[in-house]
Length: 183
Image 1 (cartoon, rainbow, N blue to C red):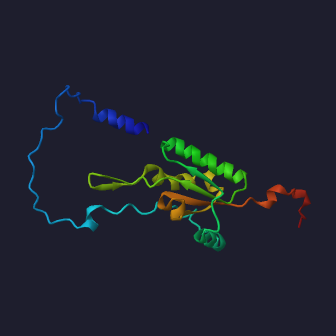
Image 2 (image 1 turned 45 degrees about the vertical axis):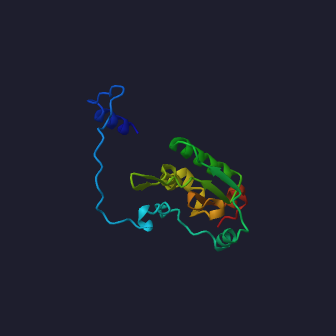
Image 3 (image 1 turned 90 degrees about the vertical axis):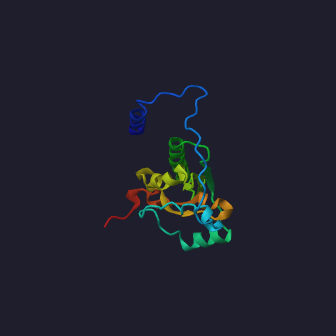
């Protein structure tokens, strides 16, 4: 983060502000278009595909959970909406939410990142939170509770949301080691 600020300051070192009423760029003469007409399919580039999730957490859901989600028989037990948050706030919220959900022994949660796609200058830009989300799940404290991740069904947000399957708590943690027979 500090690198960006330093780079920006270096780039703006010799820049002087415009005077009020001065135009930043003189108006250019219109350029006649000689290009071929654009078809509707080419007019807007496709939105970026689902965020690539790292290999360590991309585990398919159990067959039972996957089918239940597809048929609408199972719904997320809790959800978190990250709309309107900054990257830092969203990252902290995801970590806190996953820890609390695992503490409550929840199995399936929904995290809504939002698609964040927008068209600027003929290019499609994806959302920053959605792009960073897989990396947050890869952090050691989150990886220990996450069993799998999958894009949500359209009724739960589609490609702008993710189902997160949490690991089951080990039953050994609740048992005393002394009660376990020794070999």
